[in-house]
Image 1 (cartoon, one colour):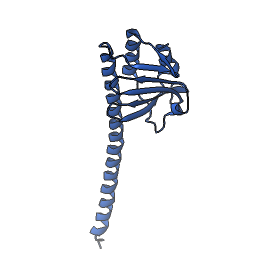
Image 2: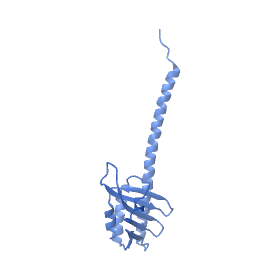
Image 3: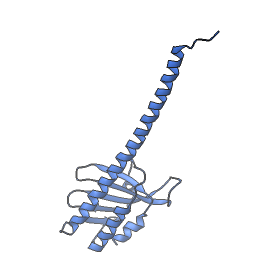
Image 4: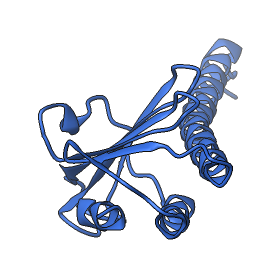
Length: 163
């Protein structure tokens, strides 16, 4: 005799397979969506800073302090700074700014209310380029804050720009 197939059992297996595939798709959409949102925020940061640097030529000189000491800048400093910002690749988004407990902070206050702070930080990832990198906290003129680290440059690189 031929054994009859139980349609309920087949429907359960199909339901589980479809549920797993949907969960897998939702996971990847969420993962890539988060990555794209972060890259969009970083592009906004980079674009805002480039716009501020372009306006420096029209007498909107920002206030720059390095380790609490106010410094004077020239056009050459801003060209190099612009290059570093354009070529920077962001690391992880951070929750806290280590410069709040440190006195070694490079702070740039642009005339339209944007503030950029750079300090040294440890990079814990195994795939890091260097042990010490920088953490950047950028507050836009609208009050939004982006906080990230990168191991591409060290604090000494940015500090040397403005000395």
